[in-house]
Image 1 (cartoon, helix red, strand yellow):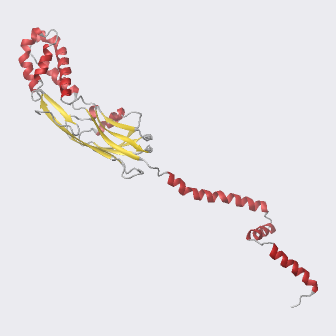
Image 2 (cartoon, one colour):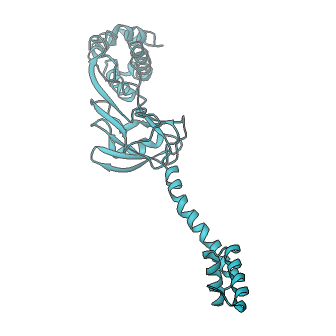
Amino acid sequence: MEIPGEFAGSISSLSELLFRTPITLRSLMTDALTNQGISRRSVAKGAAWSVPVLAAAVSVPMASASTAESYDVGVSASCVGNYDLDQLRSGLGDTVRSLPGGVLLAPLITPITNTLVDTLKGLLSGLGFEEFESRGFNIQAVEGTVPAGTQFTLSGGGLININLLEDALGGAGANALGLVSINGDDAVIELTRDLAEGETQLISLRGDAVDLSVGGTVTFGLVGSDNPSTAPGQPNTSSQNFVVVETSLGNLNLVNDLMDAVEGVPGIGAVLSLITTPLRNALSALTVTLQLCPGQEPPAGA
């Protein structure tokens, strides 16, 4: 079809414009907005604000993933000591005060009692039994940082007086442990600060919170689970089974050594003949209560 000459030049120019200048969606939108009174500067500003929104949306999963850091909690038992020294001292003191001797014995009661206590401590140590120090558990950050707020349960098993637990935790050190709740014979304890990798925190139960006259099983364990990089990691729970043995100094064959020690007390000569037989008999019958740590054997003769 032949195009009239007056239109041929215009069509040729339009065709050249179409093929040489790409028409994009962005340019059409910009032109349209411009025609409505919105400048290219306003469009650019809107585009710039839209980019961080997308970036923030993408970064959320990355932040969530970073909170799942690996850490491994190890729990192990600690048992130090087997008998109550105050109870032992009281029993020996009562024994000495019950002896005949009257006014001759009175000034010797304290030195005789102290001699018996010191000698008996040494003899029991020779048998493998020591003065009570503590019952407890070690919490170790084997891998990574164990976060503050991590909780553990303690089951007293009749051996631990849970109601005195808060005072007993005073020996824990560095204010790292706090009592959360008590439920019957159980308690929930938590870390009040982070435990750095390699650090160990001892929950040490002392004094009246521990009853050395009874046997029982005490259990301490992590609430929930940790996140070791290599499963299963270290044990998160530990139990201690305590056995109580009641025996006498006579059964332990310690009376002769104790009597030899008493004979060395300064000034004892004046009353020694009066007290030897009754003291020997009283010492032979005196009861000693030993609470055995896990794996500890009872003494011979018990």
